[in-house]
Image (cartoon, rainbow, N blue to C red; front, side):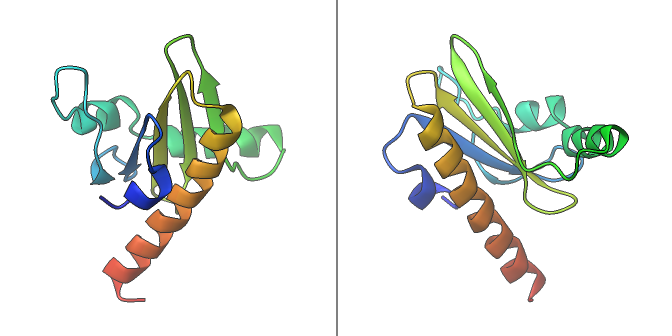
Length: 120
């Protein structure tokens, strides 16, 4: 429910993944109604570190988001902390501007949620 206010009624789902790909918040429900958050996280484990490493090697600054558009969906990733990333999966019918806006809101929610958990 962490990302419910950011997502609203759009055809989207969001996950907060730690550096190992373990889901910390959110859910990813497949077409059969099964939560596949763990499987998605496992497939993406270490992606944040790899993107950071690539950006460093290319000397083009810190990464803020990676967005991949396909015929079926748009997948967006952004760092929430050095160790965690937010994944947003959207229907391909959702406008890219909305995807970016929801991703930004989801990252803010994730950062605040993690701060609260750490007692900061």
